[in-house]
Length: 316
Ligand SMILES: O=C(O)CCC(=O)C(=O)O
Ligand SMILES: [Fe+2]
Image 1 (spheres, helix red, strand yellow):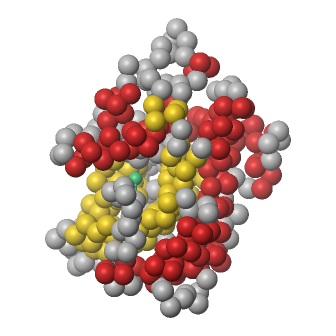
Image 2 (tube, rainbow, N blue to C red):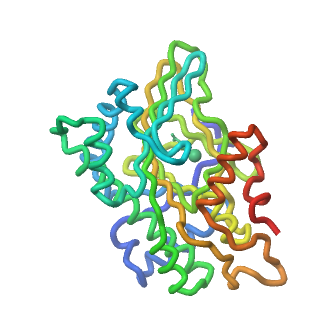
């Protein structure tokens, strides 16, 4: 039975009519987005632009990708830790991840496909993955436009933010073996992104932490994606938006796949004047989002605590 004390995440519908700027549906959804990000740091977006058929094709393509030999998967490299292939093995679990930088460019998706299937791939891996990445990035653009608009920040600033957006598409597979309880497959963390958009196959596991400290499981609805605010959105918003703390717990003998679009800004992010006033004095300096990520990765490599990386990097 549902625990009545367990809160649920806000659910916001992103049907076609809500995506039309200037409609009542848009204004209503825009207010819900701001409220959800300020209160929870995340929400569930029902977004049927990604059809069930496309979803199924994406997850079966990812299953084939992860079923490749480790040596092949290791060809997915990147200059940044965590952007290419990595694997974390625990006593009873295994978490593997692969990524495609600039995934809204089909050539980048083809590059990975050619690397791991040099003889060719008959399942249209690139087409399917690229279509899904593009649809996810369209949702992300709508969310970012709504966020800028809800705070009355100039449209030009929003356009320039979107022009310098960089997307990393990342796939995760978590396998846990014969344990009775849930296994922590990904420790609690916040992303260093502006926005992260995630979905999963049928196996649940993602949990988010609410303001009151309660961890709640994300119950994905059909056609839904969780939209999470990252540290960059928190700093940009002068701490109005909460960064979303999340973790992954997998069930015994489960195989879970997830797909996430991580957006970083390639330029320098300035804290908008519209978000600074007597009640909200400026809390962060202008900062470079990717440099913030590199700073975090370096601190992590050195084994330093990373719970207040952003404050340390660009806090005032
Ligand atoms: O697999 C998931 O649902 C979450 C993955 C995640 O938090 C991450 O890749 O940063
Ligand atoms: Fe994450």
